[in-house]
Image (cartoon, rainbow, N blue to C red; front, side, top):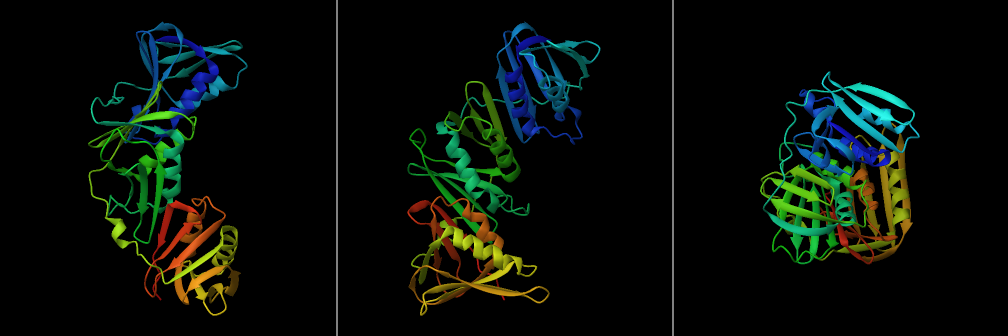
Length: 369
């Protein structure tokens, strides 16, 4: 195998595929990236069996063949050079020669015999999405995915279609995050997929290295979710399951609403959190008579604190105890400067949305005494 290519291009490609490399994998072929020359094309591939990625690289001076290498070693050998181009040539002795303007380097290769094929989808529903929309949807809800594997559907990100909106949902049973993204998806009638949390994180890491303004084609088929551009192909394993019909648990008609600045809420919750107990419990109380929101907590070992926020209050007095970390988690997903807290009575959840932004809904269950 041999090829000559632009140094910056191969560095970018290696950094992209390295996102899914499992350096602690038992199978050696999963610890590296495969560089493969087939006819007049060059591909750089990696997979962890759950997520696979293939990047096509423009190169010249090609000789067919393939080589599997440890990506970090190859990256370090290439990037610390002023050379514009790099030539890679594999030898039968199990080494890869790296020729740069200022010198030569050889690195040992890995056994590529067991490298899994990255299967590309031929069928399935296709749709065009903006990279930035997928990133926005994932970022807005991924923190609410369950860490437990007892219920795989809750340990996954749920994506479905609602009219012309792409909806991203995650829940761990204690809180739920929903993000709606406007996107022209008329090419398919229905969409409903579950992507395991780890696979979703790998996908996010890859997409964050792409141009957010680019379009990407998505293919949805049974057990597989694939995305591709002109030179990048990504495939992820999905799970076969039924996500809970979460819309039934979202209450309507709040008894109390409070509109406050997001920054004020963040600061007062952070302060209360510093005094919270091992369950991270803080109490949020709406005083309808004095038109104020009171956040308090106590800890037998640290002390107690109580602070007040002024805001626009409507409805009756309400009180709820919640995990303060759950409140802080959602604030970066809200684009507006002010937020609305909606209370629904004793034992009912708290809902948080942004003022003037109906695309994000966050539900937090109350904590028992």
